[in-house]
Length: 121
Image 1 (cartoon, rainbow, N blue to C red):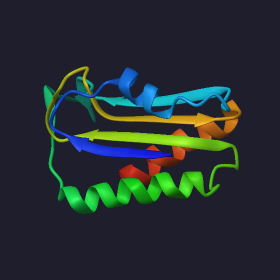
Image 2 (image 1 turned 90 degrees about the horizontal axis):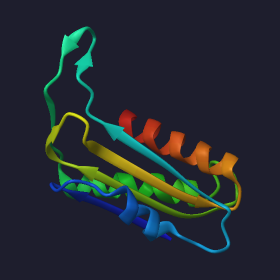
Image 3 (image 1 turned 30 degrees about the horizontal axis):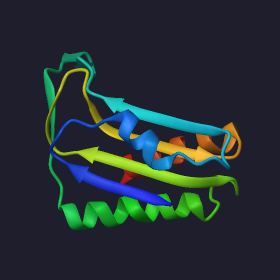
């Protein structure tokens, strides 16, 4: 029901959507955080992420478990979250989240909760 991972390779939205596919759900909601070309009026050419991977993965799994435990409603059935480390060029994803839920409002809420909580960590 939870699939979280960290990689140095490009992320695939299709792969995460397949991970959460569930015939009991009417919605798969996704979020992709990409590298944009500016921040606070300054040019950005790439982002570079580093993390202590075991701790970061544990935090990602805890956030996903909170969602499954009902923090965003009781109809979320499956959650996937992937974070890319290393250099992330313009336009490429640094984080992807996919949520399967019976109804779309809980899926949207879950994606927002997961990215907001992940960014706060």
